[in-house]
Structure formats: structure tokens, C-alpha cells
Image (cartoon, rainbow over all chains, first blue to last red; front, side):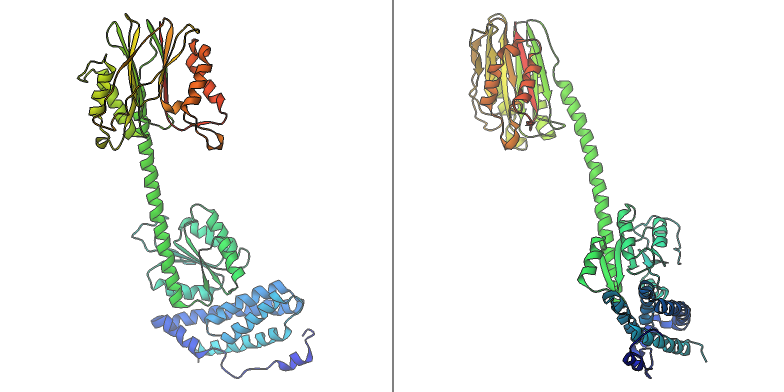
Length: 134
Length: 399
């Protein structure tokens, strides 16, 4: 971990609330109608596949303080997260992206860490929600 | 990537609108595709700007929904590329953006974007914006078709006017020599003007010369002039063509402006009698002709008539005047377009200026190339002057 302040490190915590917004998820299911199961399987598989790749990019960008790579990876993660109802993750992504764009003197360690934890939670939740999952 | 069912690149009115989705977010793109497909649109989906251009060249889209932030070509680059391509520019380009700042929207508009949609996209707003884009696209396409049709009609009309102008020119007499030598110029500013003139031997002793100028331009102006020409040339006018006043009176009766779309004609008509060496003339609101003796010690005469333009008043009267013609004199008849030129600073040339110019070039006019010399002088007298109207000029040397 890079040099984040002590207060930032201690502030990182895991939220017990479901990372997928129930209302957004219901809306998505309604939109997909009779094909919801097959399309949701397809979308969740796409998400998990992309999320693994993007998390790798985010971790590397964090290590090398690579601002451009971080912005692009976070942006690419943010939009599909919002589409699948991961609104808290999308919001964290937006904060990271805005911080990097508009505050070039500061690197948002804490927010990035929070975001990585939230990605894990979202992936877990989506695996659980994937139609056909045990 | 989703391919369309048909391979034709042409969109007919009966085909569904083609929507091109450009987004490297596969999930968002798939959701948009599902939403739009329910409306019966044909959906093409690609994940980069480069692929979007390739796909659009094969199947020009009606609406493009393009993400702003993408690797390599971003949405602005894609938008610029579409708007720079004449085959693709008609597509309604909607930028998908999470950016809401006014500066970002201005940047997007400056790149040619037609609309914006905020991500994540609201389903109802998506469909409404797409419908609006399709309506605009179709309206633009209809305008294009109309513009093309108008262009074709204009070309057809121009061709017909050119043919009519060629016909009018073919009616005008050429140079003649003998006891009366005549040189003339007819210069239409537009394809078809309202000037016509003629000169011919009525019999062995009488030489008829006239110039008519119908108001306006185009076919409506040319027709009265052609009609006058044909009536005089065919000698079908039931009057003695050796009597200028009778001729103008008859033409005035035949060409009342309320029967000719408000057109009227000015006309100068003269008859030179060789035996008596006299010139009888009458004018219907036309600028005065010039009679200039060969002997420079003799004065020049501006031959003004008293009549009003033909077609204005059905009870108008015309009278003939008569002047003696010295040996070697020349007669100059012209239309007002020769002096009503637009000069720099917006001034318009006047008849008195023209008369001064002609009087100052008396010697030049007497020469063999006098007519061209006069026209050169007119051009030189006002550098940058622009002829606004058709003009005709006849020089008849009465030996």
C-alpha cells in the first residue's frame, strides 16, 4: 500500500448492505422481461470477465500512480456497474475519477481502496444473483 | 457485433431506422440494444470508433449513439469523423456522457454532436431522443430530396431559357450593307432578356429600324418583345409600317399590360426614306435615338418622342416627327441598359451622362469599329461598373 494517511487507512471499512441496489435490479429484470434469465446470465458473465481485467489495471495504476490508466479503468468499471445496479461502486468510481481529473496534487488512495473492496462485494453479489446459481 | 439482416447499404423509406451503438462498455451497449430492438429498429453495435466508421460506411445509420469516453478514438473524435464524411454526416449523432458540465456540452456541440444522453440512460428518455433523432433525420432527408428536385428543375429551366435565348438571338438581324449600313449588338445580362430589335427594307425607298425593351427579365419579358418582332417582320400588323405613330398605336392596343402579366414595353421606331433623305420616328417612352451628321460642323440631334411606354394606357396617343438626314449621318438606337450601370459606391449611370459620353466620342463613333469603341468607352468611364440589365445598340449609317 502506498503512503495513505493513518486516518484514511482506518476509515476503510466493509459495508454490510447489499452492494446491488434492489430497486435498480428489479427495474433491470422488468426491462428484460421474459428473457431476463438468459440476458442477466450473459450480462453478469460479461461484467465478471471485464471486472477482473479492470481491477488488475486499477491495482497496477495505483502502484505506479498512473493517473491516465486509473481514470480509464475506473471509468470503464463505473458505467457497467451502474447498469447492473452497483450504484455505490459507481459512485465511488465517480469520486475517484473526479479526484484524479480535478485535483492533480492528490492521489485518492482511500477511495481507490474502498472501491476495490466494493468491487469484490459486487462480484460476489452478482455471482449469487446469476440465474442458475446455487 | 450485431449484423443487419440485409446487405443493402441503401435505406428505403420502408426499412426500419438503423441505430449504431458505439460503446466499449459491453453491458451498457447490450442493454441499449435490448431496449431499442423492442421498437423494431435495426441495431448495429460496435465497441470502438474505428469499427463504428467501418460499419457506418457499409450501413449508413439514421442515429448514432456513441459513448464519450473510450480508448483510442473518443466520442468527440468519432463525431468529428462522422460529420466530416459527406456520406455519414446526415446521421443524428447522440453523445452518451456522464459529464454534465456546460463546457463539456459546448465542446460536444462544437464537434457536431446533435444531442446528448446522460449515462446511465433512462429508458424512456432514450427512446424519446432516438425517435426525435429519426424524425430530424427523415426531415433532413426529405429536404435533401426536395433540394435535388429543385436543382434538377432549375437546370431544366436554365436549359429551356438558354434555348429560348438562342431562339431570340436567331431572330435578330445581322449586319447589312448598302445605302444603309447597320451594325448592332445584343448583350443579355441574364439568359433571357426583354430586348428585341430589327431593321429591314420595307420597300426600295423605306428602311425600317426599331428597338423594343420589355420590362423585367426572363421568358415573361422576352415573349412580348418576340411577339412585336414577329408581327412587324411578318407585316401582319394592320397598319402602314412606314408610319411610326400608327405602328406604336397599334402595338399599344395589342399589348395592354393587364393582359401581359404587368409587362410594358418601351420602343423607338424610325423609318428612313432614301429618296427624300428624311427620317420619320416615334417613341414610346424609349430613350432618345441619336442622329449624327457625318460633317462634324453640323449639330447632332437627339430624337425624342412624346409617347408613353406601350401597354400602360389603352388610350395613349403617339405622334411621328420628321428630320432631314444629311449625307453620311449615322443613327444610334439603344436600350437603357447601356447606361444604367451600377457603379462603385452604389451610383447608377444616367442618360445625361451617356449623352455626354456619346457626344464626346463623335469622331470615334463615325469610324468602322465605332460601336465597339463606344462600348469600350462606357466600360472605361466607370471602372468596376456592372451592367444590371440587358442592353442592345444599333448603329445605322445612312449613306
